[in-house]
Image (tube, rainbow, N blue to C red; front, side, top):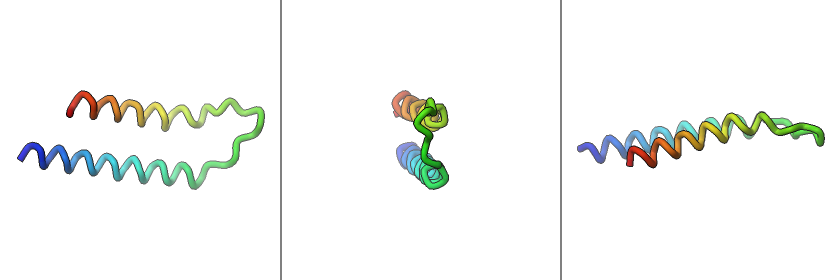
Length: 58
């Protein structure tokens, strides 16, 4: 029973992450040659934290 709930949670989080990445990828303009690419930091940090949380939970 607990494994089924964990699988549902995992699938729900994966769907949310895919939706967020699709939205951010569709709206992102091309960076200028002088940009420092700070806009990429926030989604990358969020994905890293989610990966660490799954590593600790499962």
